[in-house]
Image (cartoon, rainbow, N blue to C red; front, top):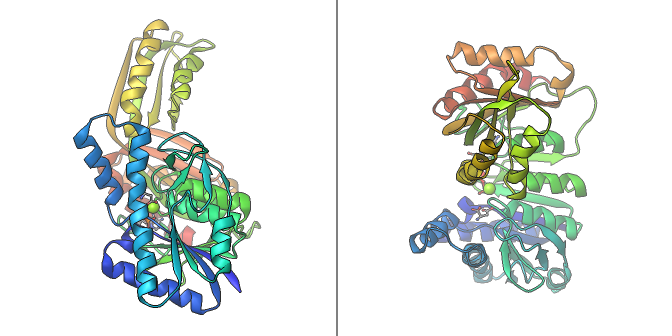
Length: 407
Ligand code: ADP
Ligand code: ASP
Ligand code: MG
């Protein structure tokens, strides 16, 4: 008898009919002699709607109360899915994150899972029940409700799969699996049968929102095999696992994009030791993560330094940087939104020259200007104007199609 942790995303549980169809899918998996834990997200746009509602009450809602509010979205879905199972004669029980033993840090809205005590879940499984768990949440030692960050129901599922030593973690989405690019932007995007953790992590970190990066990270650490598949059909989906680490690897595996990019440029900073540290330390202490950083070559001992942050962090970033910039004698701080990043990812690129040139040429031929560039061993990323991101993804997907198709 296998143990499978399934996860159903917001689109899959958006409405009574879809919840009933999720229940019959869970029942089918159970009839195949499996023990099932199903993690569910909030229905449709519930989380966004709750955030909007809070902002109609106050522009600056308290993080602790916000977590209590947001957690209700997932609590609703888990209760409803459990009821739908009861209605078709299946034994099921709905548990909140806290009841499922998920203990987290106190960092509201972006809490980390500290431990999972699977005792209650295991007890219910042993009573032959299907266990439905509210995703995206946990509780602190003081029983305060926390949430784990946007998109983190994926993380709940992988963490439970690790804690329960499940045989498989299945993530049900509104796409057939992991594709070579976001099918909303690249019409020719193809389904990948399998992908290894390293490539999937890079794609997720670069914005491929099909999977939350922290979920992939945890799956790699605990070696949890994941299948991403559609909740609307029976296609086999994509297997994410350790993979083949030999030469038969794809060059460009996929194209990822992210439109949540804001840029800050500090102009006219003097080029001497300690300046970058002085600028970035206050951001680190505010927990703001800085993504692409570019420092120009200095001329006459003065240089410009540009970096990107997520749009939601732009205001706090500028407020933190401006006093430091004045202190170190910089000329000005410029901030702008309306940027996006596009990346090509593939482990095979690391020993094959020429990929950067091909990427830049493809963008140039389409008249897309590159604002900033960064690379890792298995990725090349360009910052471009957000209004050109659709063109950029489609162009790069076309340009590297044949690479993706190679073994
Ligand atoms: P869920 O809420 O079910 O977790 P998400 O909406 O977060 O699902 O993720 C699914 C969406 O991710 C798809 O609808 C698709 O538009 C987007 N996406 C982005 N990149 C990819 C990719 N490479 N493969 C598949 N889907 C992708
Ligand atoms: N409902 C949460 C969100 O929208 C978590 C999730 O869906 O994974 O971010
Ligand atoms: Mg998601």
